[in-house]
Length: 98
Image (cartoon, rainbow, N blue to C red; front, side, top):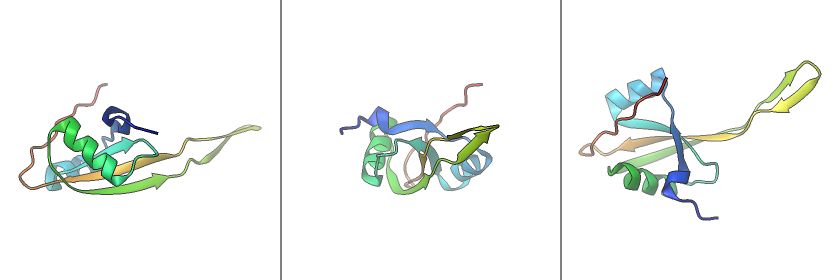
């Protein structure tokens, strides 16, 4: 399966922790495709945002089992990455749509 760069990065994760990391340490947080690996993610960020990546840390989250009365279901599994930019790289600006 061939993933395009726009298919790999699904959305930025904007939380209090990710905002602090972005401001202090030049670390960005994204939700990415489940089948993407570190090399694919690094290339996608460098090509889409025209910046330099130093490292990529990946975390997999397994979907939880949820119940609503007698009905049970499962939340989807997903993958989160922290992308650290190089010292001389330009910072990416993204905005939250409310």
